[in-house]
Length: 106
Image 1 (cartoon, rainbow, N blue to C red):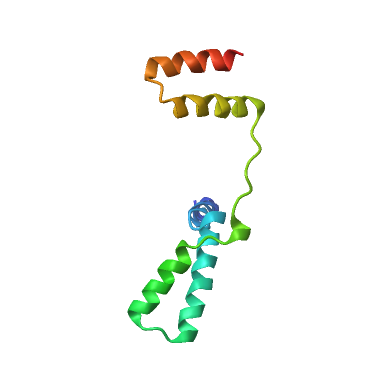
Image 2: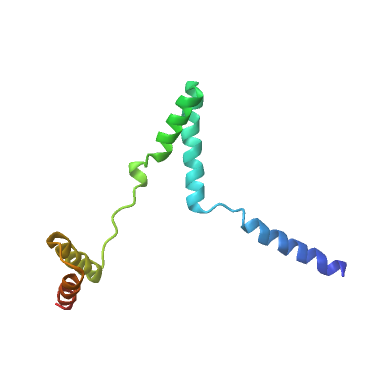
């Protein structure tokens, strides 16, 4: 029985440890928090000034991290083009449905 409990304990610990691993998004957020937090500490800001600085810093998205625009498939581009026209014309639900149907078939 002792021989079986040790491997089960090890497997259980491994499964529990997976829940504590940071995802890439969490890791990126943690890195951003560290980067934002080093600046106000070196400046010696007060509590309110520190909070305002942290809020602005965490809201800011770096230009390098901005995702490049995804290339649309031909079907997605067609949907985008067809969808723009009824919005500009202010069509009602039934009119819009009829327009979209004919636009997407062509």
